[in-house]
Image (cartoon, rainbow, N blue to C red; front, side, top):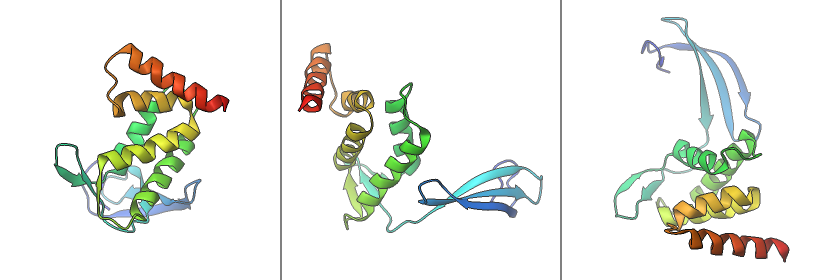
Amino acid sequence: MRCPFCGHEDSQVKDSRPTEDNSAIRRRRQCEGCGGRFTTFERIQLRELVVIKSEGKREPFDREKLERSLSVACRKRPVDNTHIEKLASAIQRQLETLGESEIETKRIGEFVMDGLKALDSVAYIRFASVYKDFSEAKDFEDFAGSVVEAALK
């Protein structure tokens, strides 16, 4: 593993343990060149996923981008980082088990919406505002009203 500090090619694993949701192995490493310590994560990847953007452009699936989107939606909410990681793992697993190597962003957005709906209603509405491209306050009001109605049922 290449050192992120000095670029040295070799590092030594000092500690390995599973993440809380057992979806990855967390490894603490030490660079044999500069002695710097860093963490890596090893995850199972069932297939290479390619994301088809709305304008037709294709790019590799980026789990970190998914986690960032979830984190932004959950910012300043009582949602633990482990819940965000678990949701990202669940979404990635769903995508990999679809049997398709190319997935549209719309489909990923639907999985995220479903996950956030169960996790936190405010995060769900925040994500929906970007995903559904709300253009005015009434869009928020209508969507939030439908979320409240669904919660009361």
